[in-house]
Image 1 (cartoon, rainbow, N blue to C red):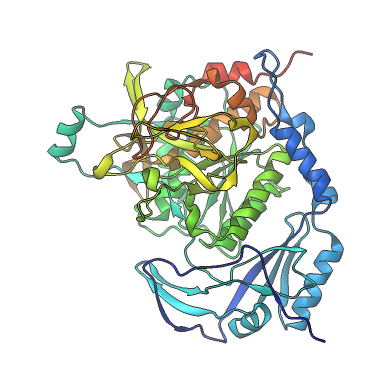
Image 2 (cartoon, rainbow, N blue to C red; image 1 turned 180 degrees about the vertical axis):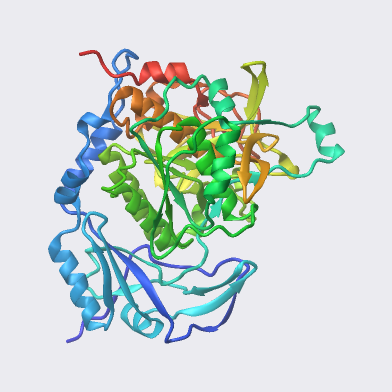
Length: 539
């Protein structure tokens, strides 16, 4: 008796808001789909992650350096990569369906299959359609993905059948100024170089030498001539920047500084200015759920470049993701933690709603993963060479605001136990799920960063600037420590005095308070305190 296919848990897709179906997808259209299989010896891995997530020693003189408990990439692949039997089961399934295996990566637990719309529709029991939205057309589906009963326990996700744009870059270009906005603010806009921002935050002296910063990019590109001009203006040598192609995407500048080129250049210029001796590797991937995950896992398991810190400035509301995609990306961040890699993620630029118009609060993913260092935004005012004031970034109806709030998907991590969020209505909400963000930094376009994009100099803000700001700091700290610091969240929450608490402002429905809050997390960098906390133990 034939066994009916089974719906893969968490694979349900819903129609994209504002999109309309144009008709069936071309049955002869060729595509590639990423299948993620389960981790080998998952119980032992879970125990390792639980140890890394445990509360830290209370004494500042005894910080823990996670690297001592971390695996090498080779060790991880051997212990917790995909089981060869699981990979063979997927390969046999693909062969039976007429699908080609174009990539098989045991450490990433990823098998990439190629075939036609007709073949994939039959293999996974889905109806693929063409849909249109203001940004263009894409291939869509609704409902779950179906897999054979023999595969349902070993498959974690099937990604790429639907190739809708999954994420948005979290940068904001400083707008042209009118009088109304600045009458409201009662102060003029300013701009900083990334070096100046690092100095205001007291970053410890280091260059990032020996470190590699991985940047995840879902479109656009960089031009070496722009980088040469920008870093010459800072009197710095241009950093070594390498482009890595993932799922056929390339370093491809569009010429539109308001598009993905802006994200790419902001990431490179902030990270490169603050950690000029670090190698920078940009992983270019398609802006789909499959492309996003494949870029992240490619960076984590890159044995050529070996990034010790990864910066991600892209994301979208949790409600726009399938649960299978959030689960496997969170698993990837857990792997990064196990390998001693820090992952910094922008918390979003649309305040407590995260740009969703349903009247509810939303947080941005992947910043909401408990294994990401979620980076919120502030407005930074200098007084000479010191910080004069720092408040929550919120331009209200005039512009953006830092993302932040409470996840609806991820459980409360132990290191956030007992915390609460203060609302603009005056109530206090105890955290029962993951709170966002963890840390913050300058993100207001009106106190933003001088950048160069597509031949023009301009000023950018957004939490997209904060992720590489923190990534470059961690590269400096890694260099000083002589080892990657890895998963920092538990340590930072145990030692909040190592950050500058931001206590004024709101992001819509949440307000800043003393201690952790759902606008700026624990606060912005206190470079000297962080260097002291994370210094190598004596002996």
